[in-house]
Image (cartoon, rainbow, N blue to C red; front, side):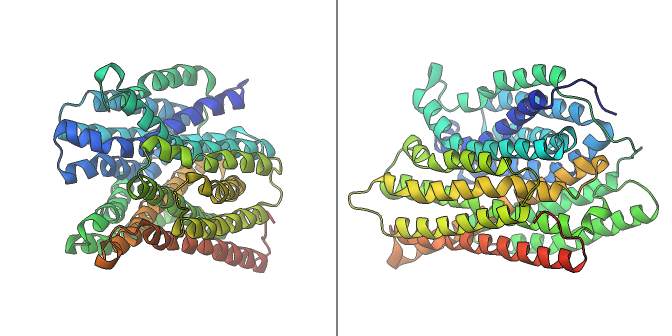
Length: 475
């Protein structure tokens, strides 16, 4: 069922505004953690859970709420999600204790998981193929700007100490934005849902959420705690839990019932290879920015705002790359992914060289070229990669397909941050390397290089398999 006479671009602006709130919130909190810890007297574990609680709730809810959008209406789920996210933001900003703040952050993640899958699902069904390419290019810009501008905005708000509120405005700023998104969303977003009658697979929801928790929680905590036995046990337990989830989805398919994760998507070479590329790509970029911020701030004394300004060439170049790639529509998807990934790989090599041999006296200008090259590559890569994944998804399964894709994206983000930061800090912890941030940065960047190599390998295997099957597309 679809509303008639709507403007898809006006709707996309509101949808991407909601997505931007989630993206910026993930990064803006990192800048505020020292202030939060001092103000509320938090322990190190509590401080970590301000970020971890959000990520865990967000990742566990993406697929279920994506499917609920297919069943109950994507506009409805988006508005409910952004409303809950805004309410939780107010609770975060007013929190007087760490347990309250952690609970409110988990509620924020829950609201984000409700709204975010609807963004890609609605873009997938609202736009014709060529216009969809431009919309996904705009989405790619929002992803990068949200990731990079968070530290800049957080540093500016905390430094301004508005009304003596310290760190609290980083959450309270979401209130007018969220309220505006709800009001405009009610008017501009069309109501689009599946025409096929569906039921909710509650046992599948439980099994999926447990599987994601068993993966994401130890990945978040393991690095900080030096991988205790229970982290290894949880990761091991994720395998049988995932098997139970997939086994249930197969049984539902055979019975002709609605699956939380449609099995026809899992059998699609194009869809599954696309998910793997999404996971690898998004595991590389956030981890790189995390260790780069530590390198700049702790290693060379830059303020959070200066550090954020140093990374500005990446989103600016990403806008340019997304503008270029959006003009091609559905043409040359695979080639654009390959070129963009090659640019990112070369950018990481260049960044590794520059960071490993910083100029004396230190200047952040040397990071402009590698970050600009990486941003341009990401702009070329992200929109066609999303297109390859979504092209394999029927409209009735748009929510489930988008939710699964973003689940892989978030899982990759958590894993990549853990891998990159582990390499970075493991180097610094060696007695002979104490204070050697250039060496640690070189070590940390080994993971992004491996991840982008993996994207190229998956892309090559995917093309080979689809050619062999006579179903090659998007060259």
